[in-house]
Length: 126
Image 1: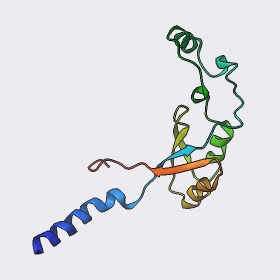
Image 2 (image 1 turned 90 degrees about the vertical axis):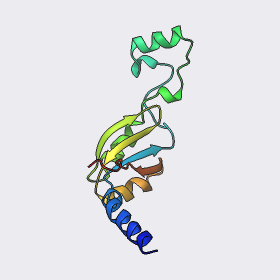
Image 3 (image 1 turned 45 degrees about the vertical axis):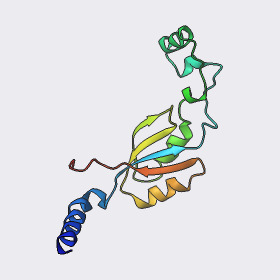
Image 4 (image 1 turned 90 degrees about the horizontal axis):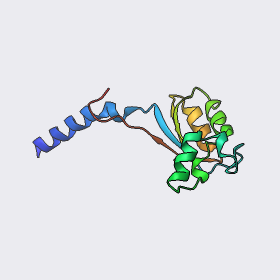
């Protein structure tokens, strides 16, 4: 019983720094409402090569191809001490970095945000 207790304490101590604080988050958006782009004009957001490839392979251009609504990105950027690291128009989300708890709370209060999840580092990587 004593060994189990010691192993539990040791495991908790070694993994604590990994879970102690997050600085990177994935922020997902509800929709692409208010986007200045239109499916009727795909050349405004897709390259000619991408459009031709889609025609050749019979792949329709749909809402997932639209860029993330710029006002959503601007709102995230202006929420506080936040850096946008990357974005995915197909997943309709951005990856941000922040240690600003107030900024994260503000981001979560936006009506167009559906989720913000911390990005965890694999154990052993610092």
